[in-house]
Image (cartoon, rainbow, N blue to C red):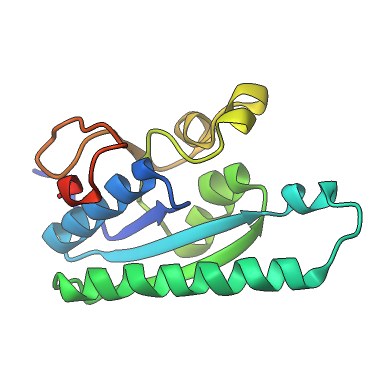
Amino acid sequence: MLQEYRNILVPVDGSYGAELAFKKAVAVAKRNKAYLHIVHVIDTRTFQDISSFDTSIVSEVTEKTKNTLEKYVAEAQASGLENVDYSIEYGAPKTIIAKELPEQLGTDLIMIGATGLNAVARLLVGSVTEYVTRTAKTDVLVVRTNLKNQLINPKESKKKIN
């Protein structure tokens, strides 16, 4: 018997890896008639380094993120996926993606890109993907390829993601 997933979580951060994960998550959700939850976690630790903290920065980042996530939802719906939504979370991406959201949402699969945007943080404290695969209590699928299972250089055209 094939595994059927009902609640899929896909974190996105604007990176090439997250884009690949999103595309595959839509395809898996459609095949399984599953619910897809798209999340972007705004790492509040990055704002702690700003000496003159201004709440307008958080508002601006939130608004830009909201617009991006609404485009992801529209794209998923245009491809035929009915059950899709998104959330913007604030805090440490690792624990929110690996522990908090899966518990809140009843997630049975996390689909995550192999690499994200922040290479410096990855070197210093480890990658979000690595942490999620090690600590999540649900299945985790690390996406490295496009829908045709081809590795593509992220510097190439986004048109080749499909």
